[in-house]
Amino acid sequence: MDALHLNSNARAARHSAADAGGKPRHAEEPNAATDPVEQILHALRSGERFLVCSHSRPDGDAVGSMLAMGMLLKQMGKQADLVTADRVPPLYRSLPGAAEIRTALRVHGPYDAVILLECDGLDRTRLLGLDAFVQINIDHHVSGRNFAQINWIDCSAASVGELVYRLALAAGAQITQPMATCLYTTLLTDTGGFCYGALADTTFELARDLVRAGANAVAIAREVCFSTPLSKMLLLGAALGNLKTEAQLAWLWVTQDDMVRSGASEEDCEGIVNFALAVHGVEAAAFLRELPEGRIRLSLRGKGHIDVAAIAEHLGGGGHENAAGCTREGPLERATEEILRELRQAVEALGASRPEQA
Image 1 (cartoon, helix red, strand yellow):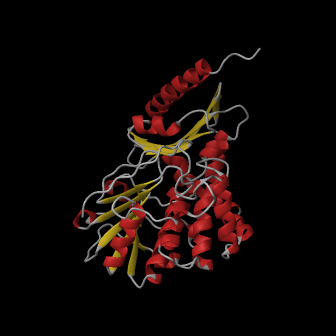
Image 2: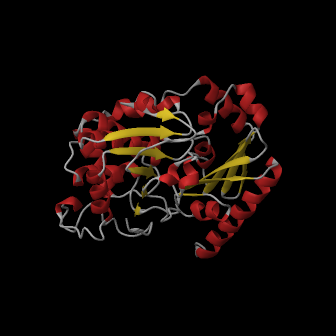
Image 3: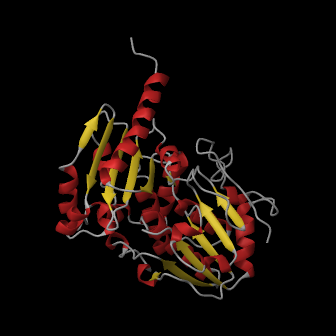
């Protein structure tokens, strides 16, 4: 199968969701030779058994989009195996079908193709054996790369779940209540409760359509926002005790000892960086977590004026313009100075680009 590449600029107009008259994109007649959706549908219709996976340390977008993709494949009469290298966080284990996601280190076929959701490469999954199969890459990160045989990268999408939704419509699938629940979860979580990301009027139209299809917006928000484990609250307390600010920056961190004392797991770290970003006047925030082997996991967030994805990419990571991350060598002090150097430069550049107010 020939490689197909489609990249969309993060600031480009949303072209895949609707045409100028507000008609769904799937109502148009795409060129099957160049349209990635048609390429993907051809691959799905031609095969029988597929592997669906996403990045390690799966978040709400990863879990929700995997589940929705699995449901789509089943509607098409296909077999779908859902696999991640890390377990599904407790926050998302109540999603419909979440128990079907297997945890493994290596995958074995036969598979007609592997569908990779929001990954910039096979290594991002931490799964071994993927290179033996045809790869279908569906992503919405600005750091997305064309590494697969079929690549659909649209940075205008608010979540990779939005792309799964478009694919389902193009396939003529029914958006069932379980599928709508999973897809709404991808929107809610990957936009930080509709606070950042590639938000557009079509984002809220999609949220409306998913609610009409059966997603309970209140119940999903309650599950995501008000089901915090005690271990995470204790870890958050340790992190907030380390909170520092400087001009338009804020950062906080936890050590491996903090993790042990809190009884926290890896997924308990999700979202802690947002508390630093919430400080008034802060434009970018960082959360650093010391890993057991001494390396440092770094999460970055921005409010729209500093491109944290560019910073993360420069440090070997990636993500969205307002939400990104990477892993650096320790010790913690060194990694902190490293990221602060990058963030300070970004703040200086931001100040230089803004005319002084009279």
